[in-house]
Picture 1 (cartoon, rainbow, N blue to C red):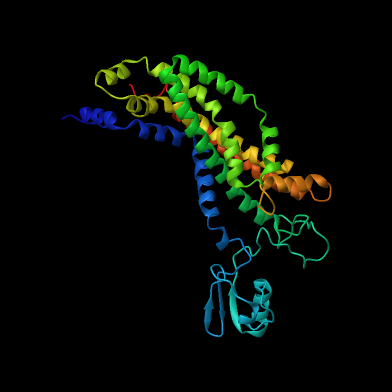
Picture 2: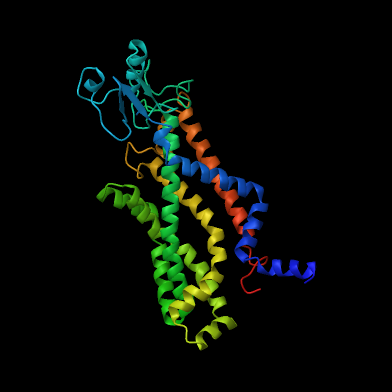
Length: 354
């Protein structure tokens, strides 16, 4: 076998997924944005080890204590009271008395902790101890930003996943079965899409206490319709091709034809639009928090920080600048990822039928 023949066999054996992955990596800003965002999101699940007011380890009188997983009273460390101690004060106390050690996280402030022992009235400007200052309740802004990042990304991913699951399923059935079913469901979708989203959220918020999963469900109910049109169009195009007719003649059922044969060829537009749907859901959560219909206090929220800063932009500028900067950088990286995915999954470049 010649070298040219070997090269041709290697080229043919490369899967379409690997081709698209190589194409994705060629778009450097999208690829590196994906690496940075994925790394930051994974790290965010270990935030209590890096940002928090509970120490990683306390040693006192030869015993080891782990406040991250257990509750300890102040009198267990030779201090008065039965409540949980302020471990930063305990750390200074141990240093002065040389009685033990307290190993705090690198950034020793919790996002819901009100720092009322600081001089002056909150909000406090950024300083060496508090990188992004504090809000109007004395809570550290940097701690709330990093915890809010995890909440925002998780909310957007969960909402997008369930909205796309519903939208893809309904769009697939509309495009595959067509006929009266398609016409009736299209009228239902048109009526449903005309419902005002914000008014619905206000009504739900007045009846129920908003929380993470309730808001995700509400946004999912309004976010599935857009993807339905794309999937429906792709199914109308794909079901007219020969491989679908071949599957039917071989006795394949509707479920197998929809999900095994047609759907893989209809996924490129779905995957291409997914990052932009994530952007929309992040922005929706920030907007709801800003308007007061989002996550309840004291949940770490970028929108609540912006709302606090808008009350007094001139003196508390950091409450507006820091969350908007974090929002801008996050959305920018997601958009870069979306551009790279859109180019990598371009059907004009790679197709399953070639």
